[in-house]
Image (cartoon, rainbow, N blue to C red):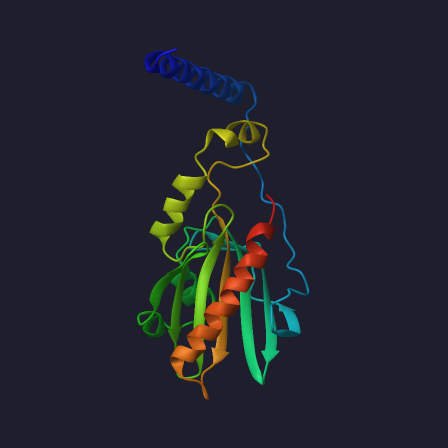
Length: 226
């Protein structure tokens, strides 16, 4: 069988799949309308070399109110300690997000825009993008854990993730039966911070980066189901 025949078969199968999807969507009006299930953050999340001190629900979470097209489905803050150093981790489960981490931090976490203007975006192999910044009191590392693909910071990175990992033929049948969504606009916004009073900024960022790698490794395979 030559290349032209293979191509014709591929085009035929694609056409058949498209026709099936179209017909099914006509006879089943709710096709693809996958509702996002509620998610409750665990009371304890292990973090290598750190000891959990406390975990609290973020009361600012507003499941009934949309802000800037984003819905905060739930939120949780975790406090860890190690060698008299305290690490704070805030988690927000965002639904319908565009992936603009700085925008969420400014509007939902109340981090001033003037602080975020000094932020730097960096990338870790097999993890993805994250942003680091600091004020006079704390050093921060923030990122969005995606359901598919690596972590992102900007809207452009988030959209590219969606195009790369969401638009796949393997998702067609699950989407038709309401088991998956083609455009998964959810993310777990993670904001880690430590005090910088007695730390060099570079040392603080190294500590945050190490904690972020372990945090991402634990959460990515446990991303909330739809």
